[in-house]
Amino acid sequence: MTPLTEPEIRAAFVNCTKGEAKRLHVPRDLGDRPWADLDYLGWRDPQAPDRAYLVAAPQGRPVALALRRPSPGPGRRRRTMCSVCLTNPAGGVSLMVARKAGKAGQQGDSVGIYLCDDLACSLYLRGRKDAGPGARLPESLTLEEKIDRTLSHLTAFITRVTT
Image (cartoon, rainbow, N blue to C red; front, side, top):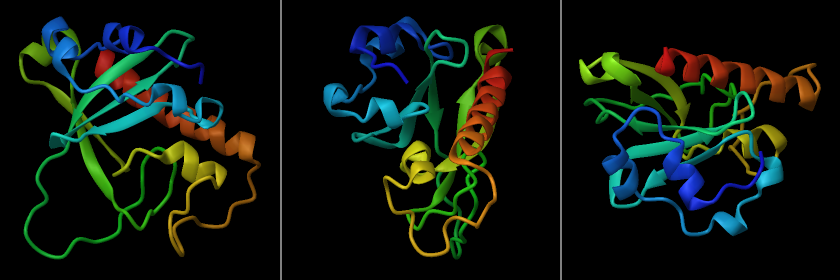
């Protein structure tokens, strides 16, 4: 992924108002991110643990999504597989819900996807971050094929949000 600036990120949001995009938390360490190893930029809001954001460039231009994580229900939390990178990280996977873009989102329509709780799919995929024992199943795919699959899953989710 090519490095992005804060103004580029704020301008890329498709499922929130310009005012919401202006007020949301953007990481201050953008210059320190491992951009070459990222398929998308994802982060959690430190002031609102139920909010997360991701920015990807599925067709060469950045598209940013505001996400919400519903409160976990009562009972034991089980390990779930991320729908994007197919990892079972020790840190957990959460259902992330995005309000749809446009009129559908204004009427309350949303779509969800199971994502790594820390949004570090790219780093788990490349072995740059340890997901814990048994978090990744052995596969015969090359790294490039795994990256292509991850991007395909992410693009499908973005398409569901934007159409």
